[in-house]
Image (cartoon, rainbow, N blue to C red):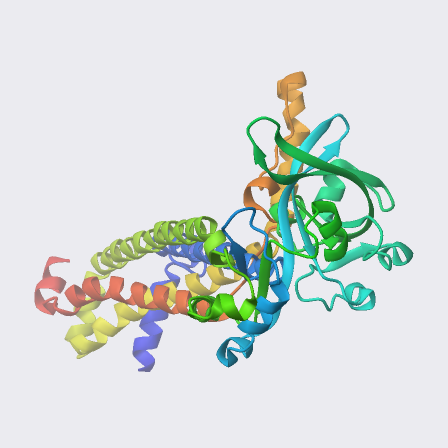
Length: 451
């Protein structure tokens, strides 16, 4: 084994002029290392996106919503509906909370224009719990005015997203004008609007840009007056203990709603309840994210396959250059299995080194990716006006309004990195096996005589 190790490392090192790796091994080493680092960076970004989406959906809004798809959508006796649903023990032990909400489109006045927003109103039983972020359906507060937020159930106050706050240049204590539809549509007069002023008393942040820039939150009593719903709601919302059980929770709710005596229990008729999960509402975005992850991962993995094919050429070239040495070794009694092991180990060790170096580079690059991209954006925006002068518009390499997040999420999975480096090493070994097998089958007499 000592002679095998000595010869293997001697062939890896090459001539002293080239240092650690021979010139023939360097290209394969570089390509394999780049492929591994690219795969780690790409998968870390997409894992981060998926993790951030789940966390934002978990923290931001309700997980399951129940709506009345009949008439104006008003849910009367909603507290009765909640009590009937909680009679299902299987459902009760799988949810954190269930409550009546109001969710509606609205218009926010910004200077001389109105911009579309989403309004959500939930019951705030204790303002202390609100300030300590202990209300499940309320997103996490970043800033708030302590005195004003204590009046959230009685005064016209509103909590908005931090991105909306920055987008329109608002400040705490400012009065904003919101308009919402009132009543049902009429052919002659169209839709009536309720318009009112609200004071901004707090800012929330989920990390999901599309949510933080579009939603505003009110307390349920204030919203009922604003929407003129007379102690009714237009939505029942649930928070579940595990997002993996969303579909099962939905089925439990549907089973309860479909019971023959359900309307009798809730003392109300003329209802047509539909149930939606947050995974269904965000299905297109999540599916697009999974598809992008799969396609790009396959493309980068093909890059690693290409590096493995390059390893075949490297080992084959090494075998051709060492034909005479192979013949002498076999003539001295070194078995064919040892020759096979020498050249297979040669490619595996190069693959292992490139995988480890590529993994380290990939982890470093992934951890500092946002800083690198921001620096690159600043560099481009610095030199852009020099070449394009007045026609230049500053660019943003990762636009928030496209990717929805206020930062670039990265999630590095150590087990995945181990799997990638192991797979790359095995691929390198397989790539070196076939040229090594040819080397092991060389005839020593013919090799020495011809070379």
